Amino acid sequence: MAKKRSSKAQPISVVTGAAGFLGSHLTDYLLARGHKVVGIDNFVTGSVDNIAHLGGTPDFKFIQQDVTEFIFLDMPVDYVWHFASPASPIDYLELPIQTLKVGSLGTHKALGLAKEKGARFLIASTSEIYGDPLVHPQTEDYWGNVNTIGPRGCYDESKRFAEALTMAYHREHGIDTKIVRIFNTYGPRMRINDGRVVPAFISQALTNKPVTMFGKGTQTRSFCYCSDLIEGIYRLMMSNTNLPVNIGNPRELTMLQFAQEIIKATKSKSRIVHKPLPQDDPKQRKPDITRAKTLLKWTPKVELAEGLVRTIAYFRKKI
Image (cartoon, rainbow, N blue to C red):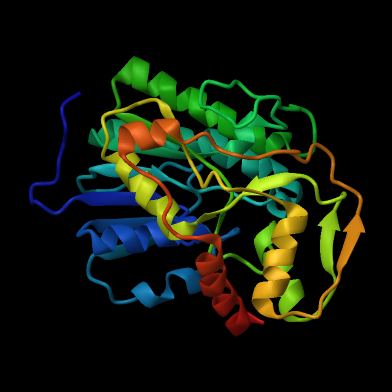
C-alpha cells in the first residue's frame, strides 16, 4: 500500500484513549520523540488531568470523540496507536457493552483511519486474551483459556476480536499492523478507584485501611513499570514484525508478596484481610518475553522497588 506520509519530516501520530493511564504516557513519549500527536478520547474512563499539562503544546491536538464513530482527520497520518478501552475489572464489569463496542467498532474505525492514510497501526491488546492460562509462562503462540460468557468475557473477547480484525486488515489490505499484548502495568496516572490491584493496595496502605486480598493471595502477577512498557511498545511499532508481542515484566510475585511489598514501601499500619476470589480471576500471570528480547532488543529496566516509590509518591498527592 502506498504511504501517504506527511510532507514534512515530523511524523504524525494518532493516539486513541489519549487521556487514559497508558495513552497519556504514550502521548508524552511520542511528543518527546518529536512526533505531532492527535489525541482522541471521550473521557469514559480517561481523565483530563492526565493531559492537562499538554495544554498549549503546539504539537498536540486533542479531539473529544467516541472512537466507535467515524474518525475524520484532514491531515496526513503516519501512525495510529489504538489504546481506547476500559482496562480494569471494575470498568468492564460496569461498562460491558461499551467495552465490547470499543474493542470491535472502535478497532474497526481506527483500522479504517490507518487504511485511508496508509499509516502503520498498533492495537493495545492484553494478557487477558490468555484467560486463566493453562500454560505458564504465557508465550504468544498460546491460544488461551477464556470463558466467553463469564463476567470478564466482554473485555477478553473484545481484545481477541480486535486482534483478529487487525490481522484481517493486515492480510486483506496490506496494512502494516502491530499487536502488543500488555501484561500488568503500573505507575502514575492510574485511577485510585479503578479496581486494579496497584491503586487498590496503595490507596488502602496509605490510609492505613485493611488491604483487601482476594482468595488466599497465592495467585501471581508480574508488574511492569509504565515507562518500560511504553518504550517496548514504541520499539514494536518501529519494528518489522507483524506478530503479536508480549510486553511485560517477567518477575512473578504472589499477591500476598505484592501486598507486603506495598505495606513495607508505604510504612503502613494496614493489615491484610481476605475476601472471596472473583469469578474467572486468573491464577497465574507471567509473560514469556523471548520474542520482545529477540525482535525488539527490549527488556524492562525499572525495578519494582523503584517503580513503587514513584507510584506511591503520585498517589500520596491524590489521597
